[in-house]
Image (cartoon, rainbow, N blue to C red; front, side):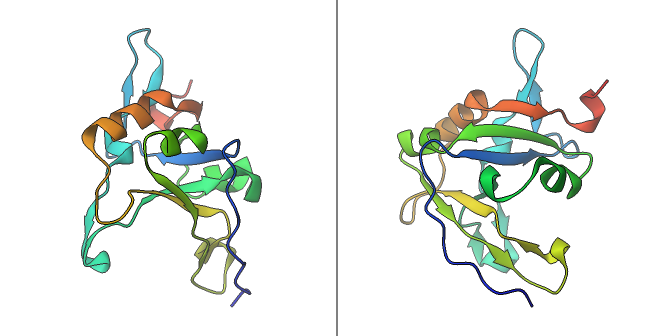
Length: 146
């Protein structure tokens, strides 16, 4: 198994990448017709393996990965980009949470990070909506690519 990496300090100017699923549809249209993530992309899900809700929304710290790696994990997904400063402005934490789960590169993600509520709170509907609207799509979901 690969060696664990020490936690990395995430700076406000760092860019975070969030996979935007095509199925289920985690995207919507802006009034101008452009694609953006839906607020569903930033809501915590109730997961049995977490004994309740996820501890944060998974993102990748862009400086610790490549676009090719990020876009290859779920080829049909789009990728949205947001500066780390924005979730913090909403009162959320951005923390490095590298995954080292197995022997292969596919089982490991040194760039994995989380946008998390502080304490026992959850990401509110309003926070999820603001996060979605602030994102910039850098790769459209498969059904929206030309």
